[in-house]
Amino acid sequence: MLEMAHNRGETGNSQSTALRLCSGSAVLSRHCTSAPTGKFGLDERDLDREIILATQGGLPLVSRPYHFIAEQLGVDAGQVQSRLAAMLADGRIRRIGAVPNHYAIGYTANGMSVWDVEDALIDELGAQVGALSFVTHCYRRPRRLPAWPYNLFAMVHGATRDEVQADVTKIAALLGDACRGHDVLYSSRILKKTGLRIGG
Image: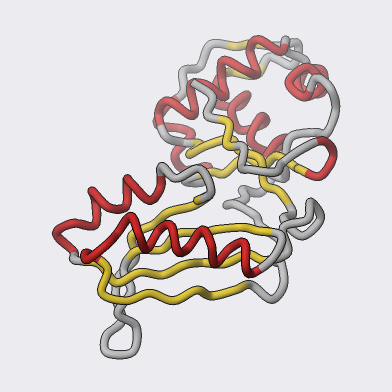
């Protein structure tokens, strides 16, 4: 099961794709069998490691990335896809998703809305907020009292701050009386996003 994450506004060459790994090479030895595969005689454990090394910086930006990786490793594309699916299924890879540069595609107002809601309601409310089409990320986070009372975070992107504020107003309406306060933190620059890396 390959989970592809595509956020609003991602099109064409403005997006890159990256593997996000949930753990390192120590996990590989616990989940793999040892049947040799590929022209280099790699067993599944070694093949999984080689696939991670080949993809942890992002999938190649070619029309058939799995075929490209397979050719480099001396296996067929079906093996690459099935091993990625196995690593997703057992949790060694958390997800495969597109990581856009929001500024490059015109979303220059990027607001993390933060909300103070009742802890007992946060799972229910977070699911509702996360289901909104304009919310790209939604998280529960610990409060840092007394300075930081917020426990629900929801990311909203827009071409302008007015557009973001309009969406934040919709979140406030959804939360209603369950919301005791909120704020919006706007990004000032974009940082490079990378997941966990393992060495060669």
